[in-house]
Length: 476
Image 1: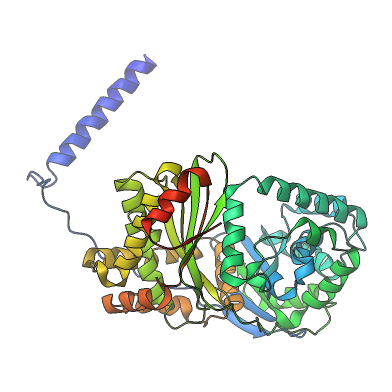
Image 2 (image 1 turned 60 degrees about the vertical axis):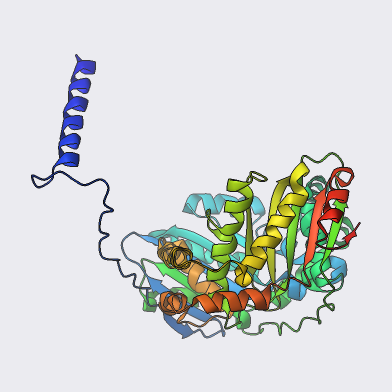
């Protein structure tokens, strides 16, 4: 009886759908004609409130009252590239992890229990050029959660046993990473691009730098780094600006003023060399990991928008030129792509992917063909330009789809050194990019005569074919 009723309902639904598909207004639909799209919706970027707090930190509040949720974060300008000595790379990362390992009033277990009772989690990290402490909570748990974060921020104890545990875990991960061709390729690529003595050349800590870190180093970095003078506090969610300021001033009343962002005075990059293939042997590897690139401009470059559209077409979209050629047409890879990464200092261009070993040389030829193509050898079509722009513009609402996303989006403006009007003007700036701009930035930032090509793979199989391509000399 039940099954029969379901079948009948399904049949009825099917009949209705067929009727709708064949006739909506008494006329048959023409399935050969593309439907006319509706009006493109206009996205309105939320307007934040920004004030300076008593301790010198900046407070940004973004109101969103549809759900009783609040996301909170404190972000700092500067990170491991600014604060880690070359003989103690990994110090900032471990300091960020250790912030939640106990305070003068709570053990690590007590901190964990308190977070569970509040239904929140305090995250802490220091990355390459920024750091943060953050949580996400229900509105009625916001004040108590903020008090807990203040304790973590102001009174961490960095217990020795926790340091040794995290040190051990880090060393295990490093040992495991050595077996990964992707890790090896990233390590070599960073060193080749930026040199051994540049902070950007330090792709990863080593056993020596991790073992050199002491508890005193953690304490000193905490005192130097986690200061309000270099911080922005972002509150996003179901709270108004005035109430947010009162709560933050109350909870962080003990956070003494002081501190300032680092100067980002990085050393000069090594002189560029002619295009070279750096081959790292990974015996009997089933695939080769390829990185092709060179240092790029900082995030502050006025060419940012043109670079993003150009690279979207080259190597970001699934139907990008690189992926369509090397994956879809040739079948040499499960996926390849390219990216510009930006920092306060030099950035980086990287075209990369895993290539089946026997086709390493053929794939490299196709990589180079597509890099030449975006420099004018293969003109950009209007369809490519439209798709390259639309995918960027239509991704903007996702940056504000939740209170956590909103908090992160506005925090990143500060840590990246970007104008407050970035999101408001984003679509207009992307749409202003021309086909000539795309070719210009490709020629400017992808120097085909000075590329670093790092390939990790089975030398016995791929060295001779790579040499025969004539693209560049091979260095082991």
